[in-house]
Structures are given as structure tokens and as C-alpha cells.
Image: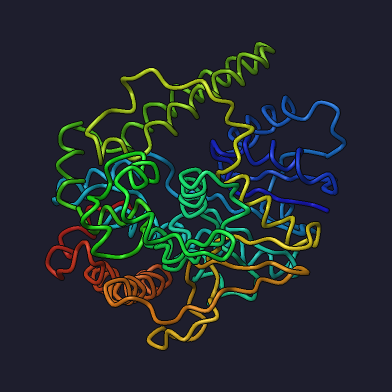
Length: 442
């Protein structure tokens, strides 16, 4: 079985490590990036991670070569690179909206760049790997996945680690193994809620919402007031923070003076330089040590600027082993491949796919983020029905924005872009959108 990774960003070594560890049936991995130097650097790190493994690992010279014959294609594209993210987050911040790469103005700009880029590879797949699955990690994952499903013939599923991280924290709070809880999750990418948590068939939501200690355990940072969660009656993912407490998110970024994208740009440049020097000198252990330290700093600083007003640059990170964590994009992507390839009998994951939905306000086939069973290589999504009113209204508003953004990304028309951004609930104004569109990295 051949797996192709398109877009060789800094999560690539984690993906390679998980593939080597969990998918022994893979005999070839092909890497491709529009920056050949990044593909080559990731190949070098991959070779460090695969001692004794028979899997062939190589860099392709073209997208067609990389994709030809693949059974699974992992899309980790970031069109415009980290520099565009940083500029867009700064533009959003200066407009009074917290800068975040997947939502608001910066998320819109990323979608405008990434939708055509990923569609390009989907259309190449139609030619050289028409039966392959596209496992999409490219952000905004829901919008990009929806675009591929609507505008190509490729089978695609979107991956995000946010829901699974929340589920793991709930399991830890309840002191039960994660496979012993059954969670009902629904929403859109970075706009999702849990409304049911059962242990041995017994509902736990009321107990979780009632306890201050349990809520502090579930949310390691102060995203939400307990009173807010009890009023909502759901357990939201952390990205609802930007919708429920958007002004605070902006104020905390102002305290730091930089957006997360700006801080990560500084960290990434330093990391890539160190990795290349270590690889060229033959210092494999040093390369992995630098990479692990970077991931620990990045993960430990996640959303701290927006919630706590603290910088990713000024603290001592923990010393975890990022290659052997239970969660993360790499674990979910590989678990999805295992299930779709029939290597596991049954898996339950949260994926971005069209749900089995009675939510009739959406156009047919619209992508949601929903709990799914994967059995015999087929995805069986949960039914979305009886969505609580506040979540329902916000989901409908964001889905309208997502569909308009896909249209704008494909057409390239300025007015279509302004109209789409104006529909974003964090913008909500034609004039604000008209002022932002020329300033974003589109």
C-alpha cells in the first residue's frame, strides 16, 4: 500500500512515525511539497525514525509522481506558508478581531488560499489515483473537505484533533478508559459541541456540568465560565471561546503583543535552521531532540496567548515524548487509514463528513464534524437531529459563510470574497469585509 503526503510541514515527522509504527502494510511513502528543500528535510528526519523498517520513503519531483498509485493521500497543505498566516492574523487583530488561522478573517484568507491548492491535488488524483482516499488535514479542515467533496470526484474525509482531545480529557476527568465512554459530538470544524457522555450506558453530562472541579479538569485553560457552560448545556470545544468570548481573546492577544502565528513563525524559522544543521552534520539524536522540544513548546503554548495573555516564547516547556502520545493529528489520521483500509474491524472517530442528518437547512451533502463509526471500510456518521437552538443558529450561520467562501475561493471574484467574509459571524459587516479583503494575503 502506498501513502502520499502532500505538504511537508512540521507535523510530517509525527505522521511518518505513526505510519511506521501502526501500518506495517505500507510499503511506500511518497513526499511532495512545493518547496523541495522541505520535502528533503522531512525525508531525512523520516529516515532517522524508521531504522529497520522496510517501508520505502522518497521525495517525488512532481505532484503527479507523488500521487500515482496511492491508496491514501494525506493533505497537509499550507498555501502561502506560515508568513501568510502571521500577516493575516495581524490584519485581523488590527481590525479588532482576534487573529486565528482557522476562523475569522485569517481563517477566511487561509481557506481562499488552501481550497484551490487542495482541489489541484484532488484533480490530479482523479487522473492518477482515482480510487484513493484523501485524508485532509489542510485548514480550515471543514471548508477544504467540503470543497473537495463538492468539486471533485475524490473520496475525502477531514481530520481535526480538537474533538478527540476533548474526549480524552473527559475520560480522564471521569477516571475511565477512553474506550469505555460513548460521546455524541456534533458541529462544524472548530465549531463543535458534546451533548452526551455515557459510561456503561449511564449519562454523565449533568454531573460534568455541575462540578467546578470537573470543568476545570476538562478545560485546562480558562476558556469558559462554568455559568456559561451550564447555560449552554453542552461541552464546547475550545474554539467556541472565540465566539463566546471574542473580545477577551482579542484583549489577551493585545497583552502579548503578537498573535500565535507571529510567534510560531519565529519558532519555525529557528527550528528549520537547527534541523538542517543537525541533519547535515549527521547528528540524528540532536535533530530529534530539537524537534521534540519544539513540539513540546508549541503544544504547551496552544491558545495561551488568547486565553491567558502569555507568550509561547518565554517559558520552560515540558519534556514529553511527542512521538508516543495517544492523541494528535497523526494518530487520528493513521487510525482513519487503518479503519478505511479494513485493518481494524471497527473504529469510532470524529470526522468531517456529510452526516446522517435531519438538519434540513443545509444543502444536501454538506460536511459537518460528527461522531462516526467506521466499519468494513465504510464511514457511518451519527444522525444529527434536535440540535439545541443556540448551537443550531450558529452552525447555520457558519455553514452559510463556509459555502460562500468556497464559491469565492473558486471564482476569485472580489465581490464574492467580500460577501463571504461579511457572512462570517466574527465579522458580520459588508464595510468591514470590504476593508479587510484587500489587506489579507489572498
